[in-house]
Image 1 (cartoon, rainbow, N blue to C red):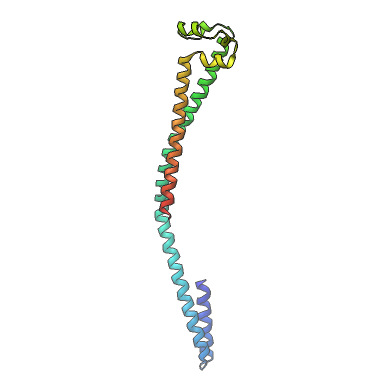
Image 2: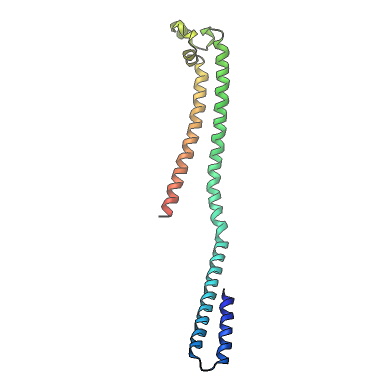
Length: 171
């Protein structure tokens, strides 16, 4: 664009040299010079902005990448905890199904006094039987579920806090 104004300036100077007494052409010449100078300054401004962005852009994303690295670690831990919980639940359900097929409450890893006090109908009610049998394994599975829930909660809280901090920066 600056080249166009420079070319117009040259053409107006040629015209001024051909018509020596034309005052309107001198004003036009001054306009082309002003527009040319404005375009040069504009180009310099864009060049300096480009240099600033080139210098600082990678640094900005380096810190964003570092922030995301922590989230990715927590997300990987959460995914592993979820997978461990799902595998544990499937294995426990399979084990309970196998024990339930025996219709024998003494095989449910319950204390003898609890087996004696237990309602005899529970042996034939699958849902209640699954809740009662293998209490230690149920407790272990509950710990896996809580572990997974803690990772999910941590991801949510950290993400929410980071979002609020970012939003505060832009206000």
